[in-house]
Image (cartoon, rainbow, N blue to C red; front, side, top):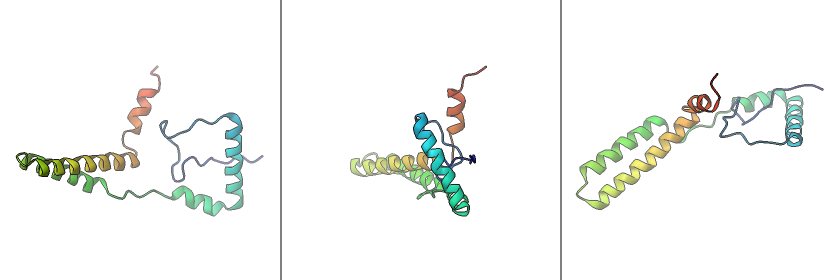
Length: 120
């Protein structure tokens, strides 16, 4: 039987603990068999799929700009409630987008893995 390197999350070499889903032994064997067949039938497609990166819709720079802009609106228009609420909404949406784009780039995964692994 030929052993092949498994593809975990199309385009990612290794899933983080929060992304991985536990499989029982039977499911794991079925998945490995599917992956092996995939590599055998079309190795070029398998290599191409591994190289795919999921693009971020809004990059971290634009998200950071939105956070700063939202904060400036909240501070500048604190006397006008509805404008300040709108600025706060921009701030929250931009902060969420910033966190998601940084997670896609892999920020913070090393710290989580270090905290979860026991120190010797």
